[in-house]
Image (cartoon, rainbow, N blue to C red; front, side, top):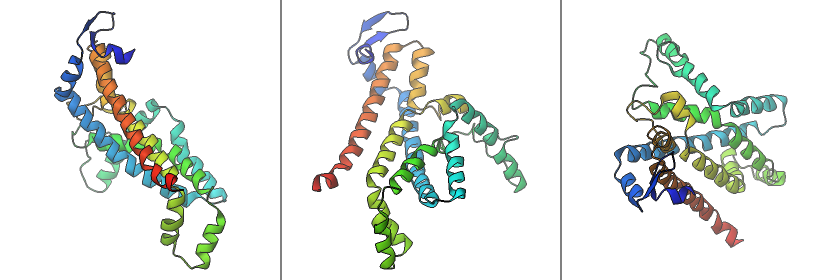
Length: 260
C-alpha cells in the first residue's frame, strides 16, 4: 500500500493525485532529503564498525566462566533493555554543555565544554556515541554465543603449537566467527539506516538539519507537512537501501559456503 501511494500526491485526509515518479524526482533534487541521506550514511559508518569491533572485543574478554565475567556481561547488556526515551534522557544529562558529565570533566581539566548537542560538527558523533552505548548488548551476546560454539580442541592445538594470542584470534577465532560477524554487521546496518528516536529526542535533527536522518525526514514530511505520498517515496528509497545492504552482506557470506 505504501509503495502504491508513493506514486501519488497524497495527504493524511485521503486526497490523492497521480504523479507517477514525480515524488521520486522531487526527492533526488531535494537538498533536505539528500542532506538527511548523507547524515544517515555518516551515522552508519560511525556506528557499525565501532560497535562491531567493540562488542567483539568485549565478548572475547568476557568469554569466561567466572562470576565477575557474568556480572560484567549483565552490566553491558543492561543498557539494551532501556527505552529510547530513557537513553536520550540519560545522554542529555551527559552531553549538555552547562552541567553535563562531559562538561564537568572538561572544566576539571581546564578546558571549555564542547556543545555536543548544538554544534553542527558534533551532533552526529553525539548520536553515534549514544547509539553505541544503547546497542552494545545484543551484538555482544551474539558474539558470546558464537565463541561458545568454537570447539575447545582447536584452542588446545594452538596452545600446543605455542601460537600467540593474536595468531590464535586471527587464525581460529575470527574464521569461526565469520557468520556471526556478518550477522552482526547486517543487523546493525539495517538498524542504523532506520535510526530515528535518538535524533528526534536528543537533537530534533538540529541545528539546521545537521543531525536529521532519513527516518526523521520521513516523519516530518508525513506528520508535520502532511505530504504522505512524498514521505512514502522517501520510505521506499530507504527500504531499497536496507534491502541492498542486506543482500550485499548475504552475498559476501556465500563464497566459502559454496566452496564447502
